[in-house]
Image (cartoon, rainbow, N blue to C red; front, side, top):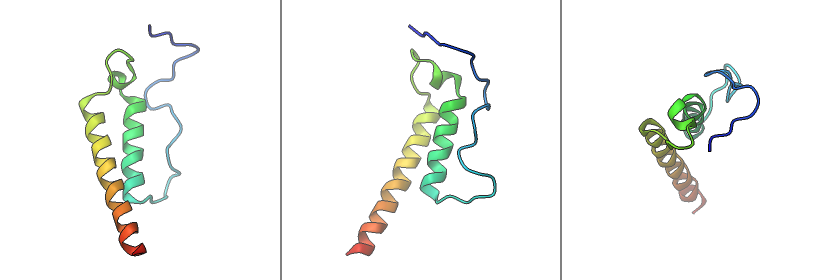
Length: 78
């Protein structure tokens, strides 16, 4: 059951993930793209449909960048 309450926000009406003019590290940029997609994509918002292929791809990109960043931190700590 898809019981939505209150007024629905239109696509692109959510607040920005980061402030204008700021530069995020690559992993955070990838997460921002993933979250922005999930908030705007009608397929991803449909509880019965589940995430779309683009969402899955963006999530894999974020995981890869995050894992590389963690590996770099671990290498510097040793």
